[in-house]
Length: 328
Image (cartoon, rainbow, N blue to C red; front, side):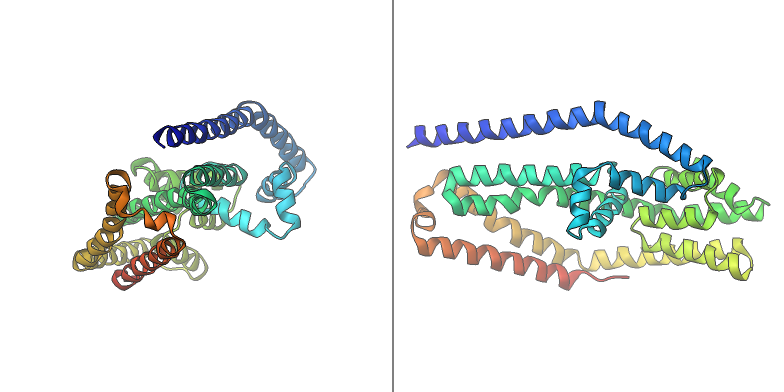
């Protein structure tokens, strides 16, 4: 029996290695051969459009991407263009400079690996369970990186707002103040401010550059800042005072967030323990005391019990997270 299991594992790892090798080879071919050619072609097209008074920069970039990718054209035919554009925004918000089709290809690859491993180990039911588990890993990484970037930016916002206010009181214009903040602030907020300054210096309107920054960062605090600047540009007033008030507001919100995290820490830890403990115990029994849980895999009723247990654990985990999560 052990020999059969080892052969199945070797077969599964062999198939997985083949898939991974093909995926990495195609990715390398695209990154080092096809992508540079597409980039040069897009640059030539943008230059020609500028000379002939063609569409704006953002429209040219979007149209070039949509015309140069067969997968995107197929998704556009079936009504998935909006979802692809939304995925592209989420990748930018996570600082992942990937093509959406590359990301979706990685999702499909991980799902196939999960299906093969599960199918070889526990049959069709195991394959159907392994497909979404590994297929969702890229989305979990995307969400974690997106949240990490947002948290860093919100922590940097109060000091940057004070820096902008001092610069404006010293006589700087808002673009030069943002340039200074971009140079003095660390990544990621400093990088975003430098992008805004370079975009408006190259001809994009200042308001549009700020709105593009809001798309690249999933932060409510940054949205407050951009909204306040755009309204002030229409109505007038002291921009330095506005920066000070926004900085004070963000600092108070961060204090409230930290207080809420301290008060709900027990519930969040309980949710993690209740989620990890049954899974850890299950894998322990599966590895060292398989006869205790053998009926769950050999009896049809055991299969149903596994499915029900997994669904109930997911419901309980998300229920506890919903209870302890408070939006401020």
